[in-house]
Amino acid sequence: MLKKYNGRKHPLNYNTIYEMLVMTILAARDSDRRINEKALELFKLVPNMTSLSQAKAEDILPLVIPQKDWGNVGMGLSFLGREICRPQKPKCEECLMNKICRYYLGGVLAKD
Ligand code: SF4
Image (cartoon, rainbow, N blue to C red):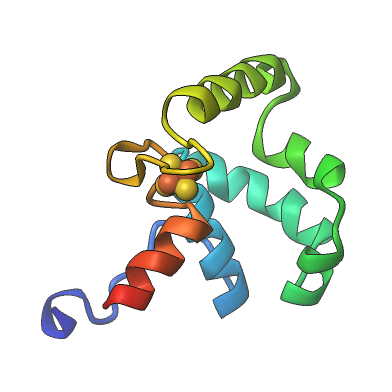
C-alpha cells in the first residue's frame, strides 16, 4: 500500500492533520470538489479543533448543508430516527450514517 500510494497527491486540499480529518469526514457525504470549495470558508470560521469544539451548529451548518436542503435534512433525520436509529436498539449495520456516526464508530473501534 505504501509503495503504491506513497507521494500521491490527495484529492482533498488540506494543509494540516486537522483539516484532513474534517475534510475526510465531510467527503463521506459529498464530492471532493465541493468539499475543497467549502473548506476554505469552513476553516476561516473554525481553523482548529478548539474552535470547532466551541463553534455553534448554526454557524457551521450552512457551510456543510445548503440552506435549501435544511428541510429535507430535518425530514430525513426524523425518518432515520423513527425507522433506524431507535433509542433502545439502533439498527447501525443497515444505517446510512454508520460511516460517520460517532456512536457507531466508537463502538466499532472499541470492538477492534
Ligand atoms: S449508526 Fe449511528 S445514526 Fe445510525 S443507527 Fe447507529 S447510532 Fe443511529
